[in-house]
Each structure stands twice: as structure tokens, then as C-alpha cells.
Length: 400
Image (tube, rainbow, N blue to C red; front, side, top):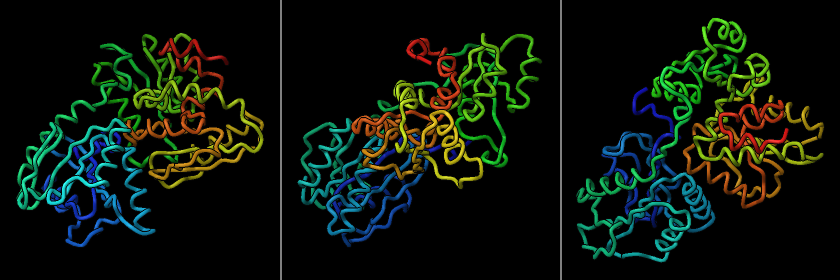
């Protein structure tokens, strides 16, 4: 997988914010060395966020986001400002582009407050330094000219230093295994699997196993028994796709640790403890409760889709209640969660850590339990404690 194939969830998200006509789009083009964004002297040229995944030296794989002006006006302007606020939830590093000829405005100050409120690393870039020189007052400030290319390299170096402090140092599985361990990965190949390749969490887990110098063994659920029997020694661990958790748990010997890709991903994204607490609320659901099932990616839903079909059916069977199920996917995560009794989210492989934690935190603000596919499915199959035995502190809290 090349740098340009790095998934969005693993890229540093760099958002460019500011007023209309401050030169955000021009600066995006100067930093990337590409004409990614349309530029014009007319205020409000950028009407929707512009996303571009690319390699940006010295950072590596990044996702650049050019946002609409935060001082936009009218009904459409309010919608654009709303989108800009949503982008803050997924931004790892913010660049506040200030028109150097006019200086910091009230709008810019509001953005700075939002950055600080979210503990978001940011740089203030005073644009148009070819017209007027700005007196800088802080280490996180720089005077640039998108038009003349002045201090663009220095700006990228500043972003690079901030990026080093935001990197996710967690491992998916590598810190749980040792050199030479055999890890069996149970990976169903059905209608929802992408043709000719594996789904992303499986690929990422495989890579982390290889990085740990351990030995991966793949098998479909129907081949798992045979695969285990052919090993001279029991594997160090079995990791399964959540949708076959119940079947796999009956095949894998009790003494062999068992977990799922989704549970590993929730730990990698930083919300496993919340997922475990949220799963405990499933048995308390009542008739008429609304459950949101949310996916971080967008794909064509097929017959047997885990989010749209299998999870709702399992919830109905497990609870015996008449529940109202709502679905969301991609960037369309509701802002108002007050009507929901539970949120079941995917593992979040296509979302960066900051956005996943924003979604979890938003649920906490509304007092809504938040869990994920693998944790919920393990709970409803009565094997949640077993699936968490590799995390002893969490496992002992489970009351099944």
C-alpha cells in the first residue's frame, strides 16, 4: 500500500480556517503545491469544504481540508459555518489564516476560542505579507504570502512539529503479542466483503502482526476448525470478524484468547472502555427506544449488511423489545443525540481518532450510552468477558 493509499483514518487532518477572502484557498494551494482549491477575489468562493488526501513533506500522508469562510452570511452562510464547526471535530491541526492587511478580527478570535476549547493545536498564519508586514507576538504565529510563496516552507515545518505531538502511538494488536506468536484471523468472505481484497481493519491488524514479528494465519469461519487442528500448538490468539463471533466462540478452545477486529479497533481509536460500558445498557432497552447504528464509511448496503440487517435482528432477538432503529454513515453523524437510548458505532477504521472521540464525547454530553459493533455483538452472544480477557482490568468488570 503506497502513501496515497493510506486510509483517511490514519492521516493527519489539517484544516485551514478563517474569514472569507483571507486567502485560505490560496494558502492551501501554496502549501500543497497544487491547485486544489478555487481562488477568487470574490468573498465566499469556497462554498463547501474541500478535502484532499496527499503526501505532504515533511509530514507524510495527510488530509488537507479547505473550509468556507467562518464569517459567511445569510441562510447558506449559516450552513457553511455549521459545516466548518463540524470539520473541527476531525481536525488534528488547525491553520488560522488571517488577512495580514486587516489583522485579527472578532471572527478570528472566535475560531481561536474554538481551537482552545477543543485543545486543538493551531498555527496563526498572517497572509498577504507581500502587502504588509505583521508584528508577530507568539511562537505559533508566522507571516506568509501565498501569492509570493513567502515562508511556506517554514509554515510546513511548524505544522510538522505539531504533527509529531498529535501522533497516535497506540497499537492495534502489536503490544499484546510477541515475536513468533501465531495469530489466527477469522475473516468471512461474503457479499459485503470488497471484491479482490480484505476489509481495512483486517489489513491493518495483519500489518501490525507482521510489525511485531508474529505469524498470521487466515481462515474463513467454515475453515477455522480445520485450521486450528493443523497447528502443532494452540495459537496465541484468535481474532474474528464480529458477525461470526457466536460461531467462532464455540470452535475456539476456552484456553485460547479470543477477540474481534472491532474490539481491537475501538481500543486503537481510544474508546474501548466507553464501548464496554455502553454494551451493558443493551439489556436495559425498552419498547419504543431509538437506537442509532452508525458507520464511519459510506458503502452500498447489501442484503445481510451487518449494520442495517444483522445488528437490528440481533438486538430484537436479544432484548425481545420493539426498537426503532436509525442508521447514519460517513460524515452524517447527528449533532442532537437527545432522542437516542443507545448508539452502536462501527470500529471507526475510516475515521481519525479525534473524530471518533468527538462522537463518543457528544454522546456523553447527551447522556447516551455509546458502544461499537464488536463489543455489542460479544455482549449479546454472552461472550463479552471472554473477548476482553486480553484486557484483564476491563474483563473483570463484566457481569454477564
